[in-house]
Image 1 (cartoon, helix red, strand yellow):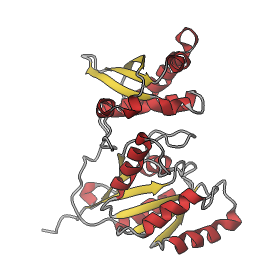
Image 2 (image 1 turned 60 degrees about the horizontal axis):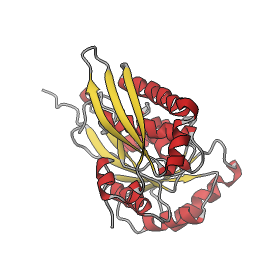
Image 3 (image 1 turned 90 degrees about the vertical axis):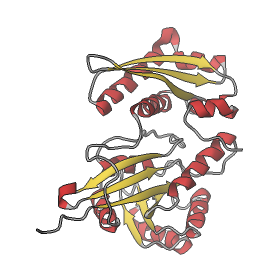
Length: 306
């Protein structure tokens, strides 16, 4: 009897400064939205793993576990420190550490700091210059050389996670580099995040997309209840926390118009992700100092840092 084809499975951690496009690239490689995305920096707060496949299990295909980490920046608050710590913990022991650089923004100080830290780490590392569709093409090779001078990389790729340019080549190369081993997730599972976590993340995404520049950073979302209904639909009850009454007024909007728009958009995203009808109930609550409260962090699924 011929031996069954050997499957491959490995972990790829995406590391970079805020707004490098890590979540967009995870979604592009997976082939479906599993991580929230917004134009604002520091949208990602917690680690999330997207599950990408290259070939099927019966053919000896490859499963890649793509760890989407928060952007790394100079932390000022306790929550900032937790996000940065979360990012570096996500990189630990990865089979490949994928360093993303916004090719349009170049090697700003915060990008250099990330690359310098990566240079001292033991994980195999690849460089990905992202957003090459809107970058100065004449400067890309020089940018890649400068990044490699700071932290020598085994491979360098140039992609546009948004348009998809170069993503298929990157995915194929990652698949070839994964070690032999059994798959860790079922073939139809696209993320390690439970449905209730994805529900809160999709609400938070709409806060970033629909509110002003600073307010989303003062908000948090907690899923109070996720109910499976007999008709196959799901009922999601979520609370949006803000620091002050004035912030609550902005989130709610005139006659509740803003929170209604946030809920409608988030519900549509949930239905697309879950493949079924969703009933979403949002409540806005003032909780002063939630970002410095240990119990709030626990309820929001985050690890406390001193």
